[in-house]
Image (cartoon, rainbow, N blue to C red):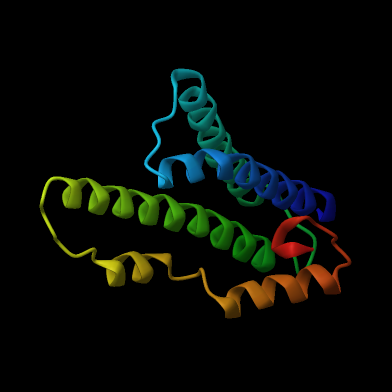
Amino acid sequence: MKQSIKTYLDISEELENASYPFEELIDDDQELNEIELEKFNKINSLIKENDDNFSNYILHNTLPEGYQEESERISQYITASHQYLYKLDEALNDLTDNISEGNFSDIDMESIIDESGTVNGREQKKIEEFLNQENIHTKAFGG
């Protein structure tokens, strides 16, 4: 199970890192060419697939004692953080589009933050403590 958690978190971190250059181009109002867009969409698809696979794994397998709750916490936290980033990026893109069209509407940041629920420092700390306790070394969380 330790290896499964490590693999999930490492792949998640690698995919997030791979998406950063594309996100920076988008944030700088640069259009992605067809090849870049294809790569970016593939990375996003792999992120979702990684989240779904880990969630299904912990749902359909008997985990060692003490791992069920923490594995679910990890899955929920990482999946929610990905969803939060997608929604935030979407909201910022909508805001940019609206401003360029002369509309100055506000972003409902509170609803985006509320939806993130499990994405907070307390949850991350619990995850990091579990990883340390179980001696699981991963690229995630700067480790």
